[in-house]
Length: 406
Image 1 (cartoon, rainbow, N blue to C red):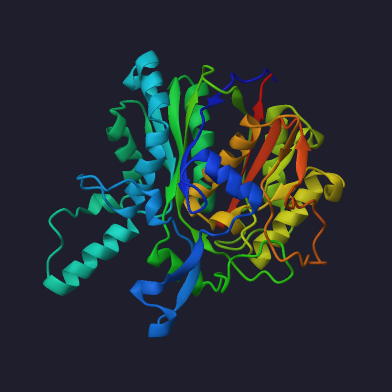
Image 2: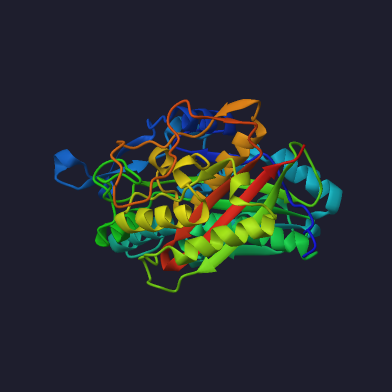
């Protein structure tokens, strides 16, 4: 099979509870810094008031610039704007080089404006009227992508990817398709999501939310911790900046259950193997693997089985970590945010590099195959290739592989 045309990834613009820019986020991941995990009460309550409270990866106020005077001042757009401003120079470069009609947008998100909707409906139930600045289109799945296209004056294809917690990874995959298919010369691709009361209640109804910061792959794991954030790349057919490319993409669908993964990991195995085949490499070429690692009993068990099936002698294979214990599960942003960590690792790689830490209680589940979890100070030599997994509700599985050229 002929080698596909390269797709280059710019430095990411990002924001999450662990950092307001790339270098700070990567340092927090290397150190296992969980200070962004904070109690998040439901509907303004607190434990002392009798309301339930959960842990969440909540972005601190000091990470945001002052709010502007635009209508889209809701939290999800403040998060998106803060991350997008970091890639503004790259966006302006590709618009100048190719024209606005040759630059597309591909964004993954799960929220669909729930914060805007809740605020508007509270006003309606109180006053009998919706706020004047509220419109139903703000709740549309496509609205974040449309907002980004308007923000930069882009006229290329504008796509929204919504495949649950793999949405951010799926947006990057589809952005590469737009470039390789000749529809675009560059694409803004990534994901954004918030910690929403609606989503939190939904996960709680599934009994999937942990009562403490998540504990991925531990015998004591008992659920996810939600988080919020954004990560965006400028994908381009030409090299600009650090020469990091999208080497391989693997996608599969379990179609097993609406929320539970296929227990034997078959869909995840296929996604990882297809990504390796797409990249033209073997498992031994991967220097670091960022796990999906939600901390739920079923998802972690499935992923451990899948990784052990793809990577022979996984206990001595590439170091792995789930960074959701640092950021929380950022849902539609997770695939892009975790790929950003891989990008940052590749871009800072020297002879030896400390990689993102797997933060947990260290009590391994003896029913799962043993993986090589990265601890504090785990180093890799001459890191050149990373894989990032996103295994979502509905059996939506995506594995991405990126690499650094000489």
